[in-house]
Length: 314
Ligand code: SAM
Ligand code: SF4
Image 1 (cartoon, rainbow, N blue to C red):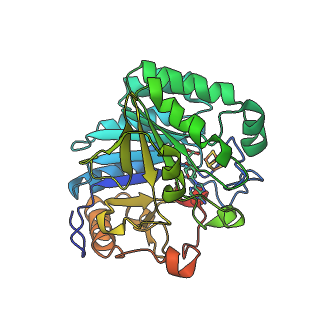
Image 2: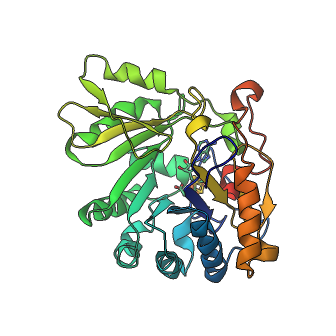
Image 3: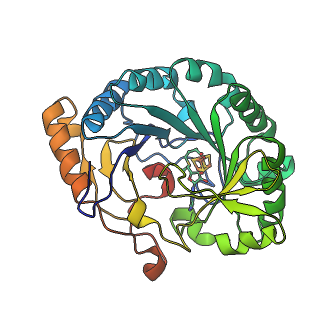
């Protein structure tokens, strides 16, 4: 549907858990400290998706926390795939359990995978996340072999992993995947680190023949193709070049709140209406129509959200 600022809102990110099997330095360094375990059930998720699809949402991305730790993740994907009008289902994952689950996920309708990966060095991966990099690489390779659309999301952080930018660009040389550099946002634990901007990274392309990809599916990323590379390099420039004017998304938190902007306090509780499709549509419609024009991260230097990334669903 079209919001107050004439944006077509056709994409929803649904968080299905806040818990996670990793402990990323800038996200959840001490692991999941439970605020609740009352995560949306697969039936509740389906009701929300049915209502969203009636309002023109065509793409769903499942996120968390780590969505693949949900034991019913295959059924969650399956029931979203059954909803009329949903054309595309993706997942954002740390990739640890991807290798184990990817075949079943694809069988039941998964089309895209975004893998969050901030280092290609095994020892550094342990320091940054507490996990095993080999498992992530295995999942990534299987996703590519199965023909999924694969994006690797990397957050370059000063003094932590910014010496690996060229290695990540190199990943696009022989493999058809997108590596996307994401600017660290001042939210939760992220406030303790300093991110790198797109303009800093563009310096690494000096001399290379790069072409901006126009018509990149309407998403917020800026995408480039390097001459001779099978894959592409993209940027999510939340901090340096705001893309609020073309924002097409809303978020549903794992406890059933509609959040129309990642960096705003506004939330609409969907649970009281979860079994009443008409009322659910009304609340969603009101919230979506009144989606904020833009975030104020650049002025405030901090997110206004009362939730950190892991409780919103990144
Ligand atoms: N566990 C899954 C994963 O890591 O892909 C999904 C949830 S995670 C919260 C989603 C994304 O949020 C990850 O790509 C992570 O890097 C990103 N993220 C977490 N904190 C962030 C911050 N302060 N700024 C920008 N991105 C952040
Ligand atoms: Fe877990 Fe994702 Fe946060 Fe890392 S970024 S701690 S994988 S939720």
